[in-house]
Image (cartoon, rainbow, N blue to C red):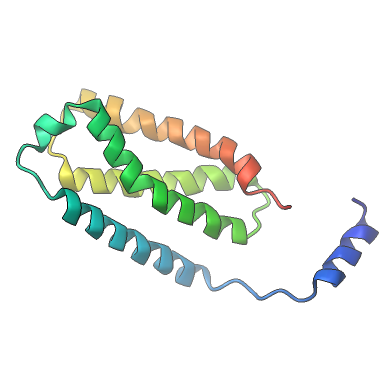
Length: 144
């Protein structure tokens, strides 16, 4: 697409509504994730036998997916509205913020402070998810 075609396309689309202030977007996302945290914590509860449950990798994966997926989708939609120029970087940062939120939520429920557990079940998955978010950002956040 050359410059003339781009200008014609932008003129045909007309004026666009400006994005809300970034702080307003962040507060909207934070409020939504806090509601999600309250709902899941209310459903799952803070359990006394949580250490036994967290020994089960499927339970850990279930919690990570429940805590991270809806906020992750919301974050990618918010970032996409901003039309980022560096899509891989934006995807990685969006994934990083969601995984950090998921980690904090997990720490509210989990009581295991074993360093090996924290590295294997917390740090490595966050790094892998950020790499996946970087690759997803390349496709999900690019301008159409």
